[in-house]
Length: 374
Ligand SMILES: [Zn+2]
Image 1 (cartoon, rainbow, N blue to C red):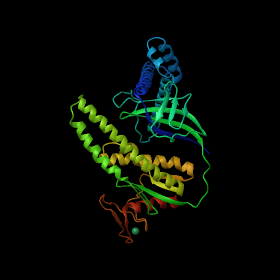
Image 2: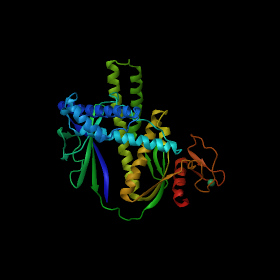
Image 3: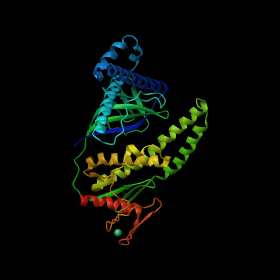
């Protein structure tokens, strides 16, 4: 079976390489913003928006004159940025259509990229080679990797590489097409999975995936750093330093979470034939929340995303429960539905049949039962 997969790992760059990467990211950002401005101008003039190919051709002409600095970077950096812009544009129009059809989606017009959120990223295609401890990219040459042996060397077709900066560190994400063995038929069971804040995931068979312990202490540190940033004067060197520390702590939290999520989703996709998870209204919940809740939300989104693609690899059908399915309020033994259940009620107590059960486990079993109900 042929699958698409991305492998992301940290680069180990010297100063000259960091400068070269920043220059590539700058060229990508410039091309993106320039292309967006061109598209907007065409729109306002009532003309057809230029495509990535049109824009790339125009840019190549400008490179001979006012944009000669672009010769210092790989031609793929601006080219791929313009392609991304086309994708963002297509995505925007798709959302507009969905909204017109009555779907509850947020429509955001592609916005100009600013340097505020870091140096950004750029994508390269063309001649890319992976070695055990390094990766070779067009124009940038051989770049060392912090983790050896993670990127696949053999039996993959490389589609491209995205280099990005976060918190002063540089990463490369390698997109590949690879052949994996077809999933083997095995004795598998169905399950419901309840995702939460306190526990990462509760499975209907009783298994619990706890949040990694390191997450809690890092969260405390994050909160402290956020307070530090808000106390520092805007534009001051101290604030800049605090923002950098905060960004590093964020990356750390994200990494801890990711590792734990991958373990859980791989296990579930391999051992279950069908899984039901809640369909969460992600676009609505990713704002106005406490930090812990916000990070849990992102985790839930990531959990479902991983489960869906791993489900395809390992032959596990992943289903979403309807957003209005009362998985928390329903009794998993008799089906009675309560009108309310308090957030602090850790146990579900059924007045109809007398069942007393852990709240999350009850929800997970209710989700599992959807497999048989639908
Ligand atoms: Zn009951």
